[in-house]
Length: 454
Ligand code: GAP
Image (cartoon, rainbow, N blue to C red; front, side, top):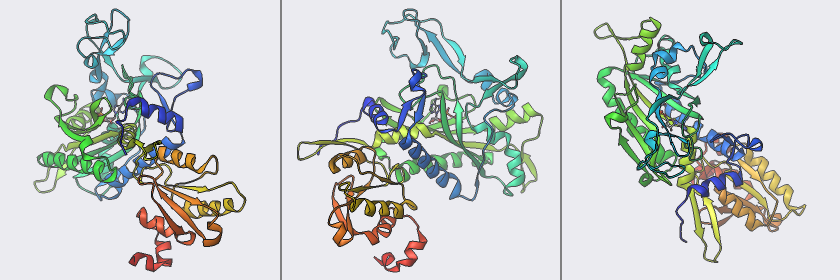
């Protein structure tokens, strides 16, 4: 079986065809580079969020969640430097009037009309989305949609110190939407104006900050490899050059993924020093410090920040898992080799035919498995076509009820990657999948203790 190299068009086409993502407000012609997630994409994003939350928050006793507001007092963004510094360099092409990020132009050629070196001078364009709070649209009522979730953690640092009953080091983590008026959004869900971030601000003593920066770089890289099962060969860590650093950063390392067009940022792990807490102390006039109990002195903690976009992870996972295989019988199939934890459907239950005797068996299996797994019932089309569809959406297991099931009370389990099949008793199915997918359904395991000993 030969594997084909995935292209950008393969992924966009699969996503639209199967319900992962659609152009937003499509019936009105869409709105540039904005996407709505379909039923499969929604489920995959939920799985990514849950895995991140479990790894970054739930399994640690020193990281705490937060849900901060998207619209804040505009002083937050003045103090953070975003109002004055959150800009990208913008140029216009004098030939076609297209607008581009200057740092995205390769070899002085316009990406639109391909004419060389005919651009306006660079000017800075601020990426903040502006809005007005209340009925009057004047400068006094300007507010900004947050361009990163991070500031919600900084402005709440003192609240957390007072309520979590822990000394630093500790982290505050958030998942939520962010908004940037990007000059050139694009490449499907890689760069959009509205996107979802998962960020954690880890507050520590200045002398420990380098150690924790290294620690989080390793933790995050391990997560992609072990939990998301992205092949190590598709990932790399790259330290930013001094002139690439964001205005708040002392040092940043990106985890990069090898996208169809080459290496690109997946996650940033920044050393933000004391930039943000100092800025908010100055901006608000409030003291924002931690106490060193050894020498009884107050100090401003430093911050290490792993920050990533949910949408970007989803795109990387689609790239890493997409495969087109030539089969021995001359047919070919598309498949997503998704990990079970990300697959939007984990088990598809398929009666071989729509005959009355088979569908109730299949429906009962669905009801039985639904509580523990993401299950889909499908009785349309031929069994071959149904298998192909499940392969394309990354379903790791198909359960087929056939006419023998009426006699032997067993079904066929088909594996997505190898296409091998196994006959399993219907009464054993739930335990079988619990073991396969390593879920902890204590109730079932207690009812069948012999399974544990296998
Ligand atoms: N708080 C730090 C921060 O926001 P960033 O590198 O600008 O840092 C962090 O963003 C992550 O958010 C990126 O690595 C990327 O995964 C995601 N991200 C940033 N801008 C994005 C956009 N326009 N569309 C989709 N994801 C984006």
